[in-house]
Structure formats: C-alpha cells, structure tokens
Image 1 (cartoon, one colour):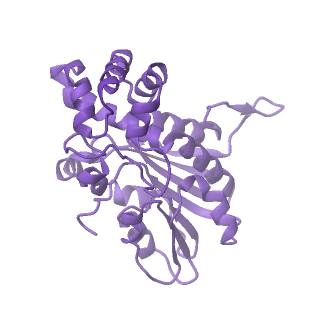
Image 2 (tube, rainbow, N blue to C red):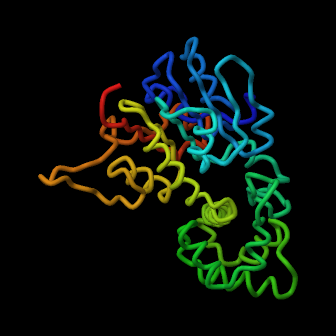
Image 3 (cartoon, rainbow, N blue to C red):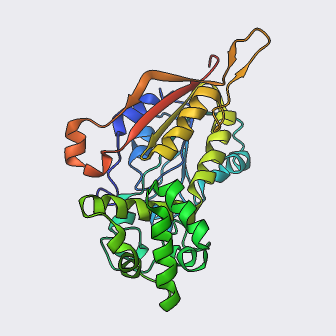
Length: 303
C-alpha cells in the first residue's frame, strides 16, 4: 500500500471533513486507500464509508472491515450507487483528483512520457477509447481544442498539425511515437512541463474527466446532509475552477442565484477562507504534491 500512492494533504483533508464518528462518508478516489484508512480510523460502530475507484489495481488495495464498502465504478455514478445502497444523505465526501503515483510509475499504462509504452491512459481498462484512438482518429481541429483546453498549451494548433502529419505515415501507438511527432515543438526551457501538459490533456479526454467531475460534484451537493462537508484536492486550474464555482454557487458554471430580497442563495459555504496547499516538508517528501490545492465547503444548515 505504501508504494502504491502517497496520500496528499492527508491530515488536512480528513480534518476538513469534520468527521462525525457515526456518520456516512464517501471517498470517491480510493486509489491506494490512504485517505480512506484515515477516515475509517476516526469512525465508530454504525458508521459507513464507501470507497469509489474504477481501476482494478485500486480494487486490489481495498481493505475489509465493518462499515467499509468498495465500489468499482467511476465516481460520476455516485448518486446511483448511493441510491443502490439506500443512502439518502451523506455526512462528507472526499475527492483527491490527482493521478496516483502507481499509474504514473506503471510504464504499461502509458500515463507518462518517461516510459516507452502503449498509448492507453484509460483509468478503466475494461472500456472506452485509448489515447492512441484519440490521436489517430480525431480531426486536427478537435485535437487542437483538446490540447488547448485541457492542456492549456499555447501552441496547441501546431502540435495538432504535427500529430496529424505524423499519423499519415504510420499510426501513433506508443508514447515514443507521440514524443517523436511533437518533440521538436516543445521549447527546450519548458519541454518537460509542456510534455506533462500534453499527456494530461490526453488523459482528461480519454477518461472524460471534466464531465465526470461535474456530475460527481452536482450529486455531492444534492446528497450532503445539512452541515455535511465536501473536501476536494485539485491539481490543475480547470479542476480547481470547477470546484471553486460549485463551492461558491452550487453549480459548475458559477452562476449565483439570488432570492426575492437579493440575498445570495448557495447550498454550500466555503470554509477556511483560502485554499490549503502542502507544507514545504510535504512537497519535499512528495514532489508530486506541489500543485495540490485543497478546498473545503459545508452544506448550509445544521446537522
């Protein structure tokens, strides 16, 4: 478990949930189980914790114990599964949206440009298009949009054009094929950073991450009991913007509603006043935590 994934902002995120020992909680990004174990340590008899993950490797990290249920599913189906288990309300939900260290270090999954591997990138290897499918079938315009929107790459059009040119000679099937097609377009001073953004964009597209996040956050707002907490750790601006909008307004668009008297109507209130980031010590111990931001909000009303 220790080498599978190092949980980021562990104490801060679980503290943020304001755990009620007998409550109902959900960890929608089980991964190696680090956050779930900490939540379980704070629960008592009668409490329940549901751990979501769509990846078979994560399921093998699942632990037994009274009150814990592992759900092999994408967290976008949160509402359906809670209905299935008879949970009308939950007292807290934690989401760590980062890719696990296990995925980044598993060469065969194709999540990192550091290894020569098949361009897969699916979190759920049982279904869906791979990164290779995306690269070899999308139009140049659609590829450009993916790279610009999800990777925030300023030269997205040039990168998309290079990919289309390269695939006319032979399909792009491996990470090396992709890097060979675009390597000359990555400025030397930020080549690693731009390569990471390129792979991030493809991963988000392959796994439909932004759509899934929007659905999960909407379900969380609906399911949280009054006084229940939502704790979310993000790693890039697209995720953080969506989470911030939901915590401010209750919807991913950030559309603020007002009542008849002009008072803001929002189902959540953000706690702490500002985002929490990893300490210098945590960033040194786990460099992959450097871009993490934790936001915590509470459902309006009393428990």
